[in-house]
Image 1 (cartoon, helix red, strand yellow):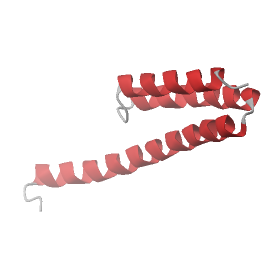
Image 2 (image 1 turned 180 degrees about the horizontal axis):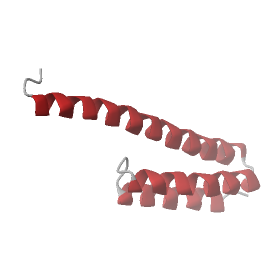
Image 3 (image 1 turned 180 degrees about the vertical axis):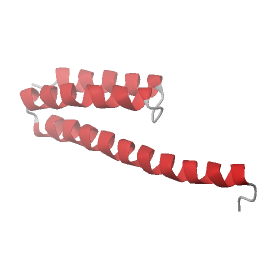
Image 4 (image 1 turned 90 degrees about the vertical axis):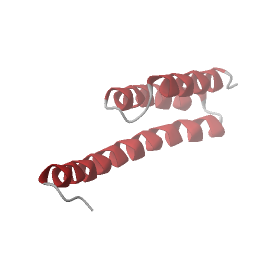
Length: 87
């Protein structure tokens, strides 16, 4: 348990940051799931639209420090390749 005033403040900040990051990660996963479902349905238009909507969310996750830049780059690359391969 935190004892000093500074460590108590740090603990409070970490709790708040954890909640914000958790919400961001959840939001991004929802966008990714929408892309996955569109790919699974085989609808190229819906998949490309979902991918276009997911891209800014993923990049925002990078700028906010939720995801690493290379991780998002890899996900975008793989998803776009899968969307391109549809029918």
